[in-house]
Length: 270
Image (cartoon, rainbow, N blue to C red; front, side, top):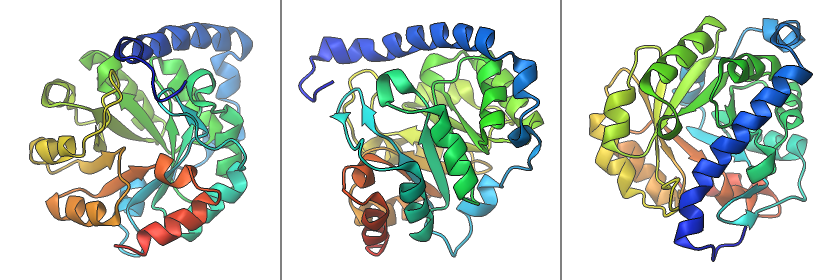
């Protein structure tokens, strides 16, 4: 999808993603029953601690993302391989990796997460539109240490139940919000981190001001993450001073021929 999609088309993207995801979940349940997921090798591994890694002063606080395309930008980079990119991110000091597993809209693959898990010894976020317990169990089976719950597409009780399940499986939980209303209705003790998405999922407009507006409303017991639209190292320094612990960055690195090198150059700036 190109950058010049209309506002109406943009506003419908999230609804389309959720509708498509519900169909995929039902098909996946028939193809691979949950009992088979629970038999995978990764299901029994101990997860890496997201909190420990993010707060490790020897690392950067960057959650570096592998993303081939997006609904707003179209193809970002479909030439690079998971192994090389994620190894480069880790070498550059990534505190965690984020792997897109949505194929229809972001060009992600579940095998990308499996491959990243084999190649790296750090927390990995399954970046996905999670709607069901099946997907949470699947995330553990694929090798994730951390799941994403998006407040815009989940009811509060769904957030709590999915977070509780993830915690019972040893995973950490990142809640994504875009505004104060989403934040205040979605906070539960089962969460580990709260991320502010600077990109409006309805319009795809980006403003880092969203992070500054919400940082003081996030309770101190949660890790604070700023997501999307982070293209200047100085912004990272300013967000850290404002109280953020982590910074999810994908497109800014992935649009370069060598994303790992791009991250290294970026972190040298703060």
